[in-house]
Image (cartoon, rainbow, N blue to C red; front, side, top):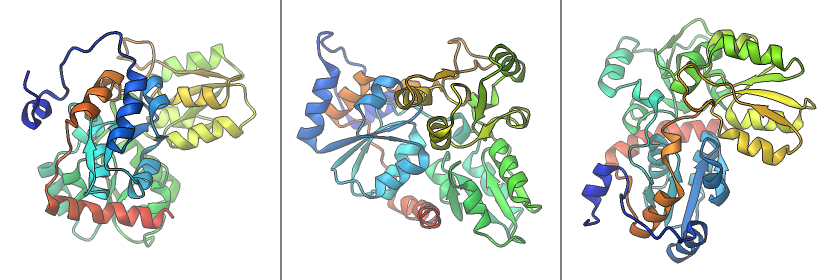
Length: 329
């Protein structure tokens, strides 16, 4: 197989056989040094990916980290919109995504042409978009946000300012309720992991574990948020599990975060409720789990697939991200 930008980016990964005796962890560490590369990983990645990363965080922390990186190459163990954000914030760096097909159901729920028509109906509204969007959607936005700073971003605008919030309807409705905004229009999008949590299954877990606390991400549906003991972003859920004195938690978000929770709280119990459509018995994002150690190794070796974006698009998309980072200081 000939290795090239075109065929690798089309395939989404480099489909090559490697020596099964190869110690991937050690060879990845060696390649990082040789190529002055850094690996960024989201909390939703598999444990072995998180453990080899130079930095693990949620969307806000990863965006903040990207700005100050001292490396020639960024390998993003996450999904495509995250790698795009890294490229937008560090255009001079080579940004690699180990599987170009690692997308996002939430980002896919907000298409450029549809959203452009939607916001045209609200010309006097500020457009706030979740970072879980494509670079094209960011280019139509006034400010970006994450689940960690969405309340702060919304509250930074005058109370009478009209707002279009996209793409997550559950997060949007939660923020609208918390902030009391009457003039907030919400796009109808959702994350497949958080949307599929079963209220009945969680209620059964609560009955079976009466001393457990339910902690939930605001992308979950309202009925689940209403019975939660704590609601917060991925990083906030992690911090709560560290500081709180409870021993058992039902964690209503992508199960990858439980790896960090267990590392920080080895004596506590964390339960991942299975969504309705789950075949694995846990709440996994199929896109996040597309990244593997083998793909990271091959990506570093061949420096492909690479995230390539037009300069004009990056320049437009950078403004709302920078505004978010400034407000989040």
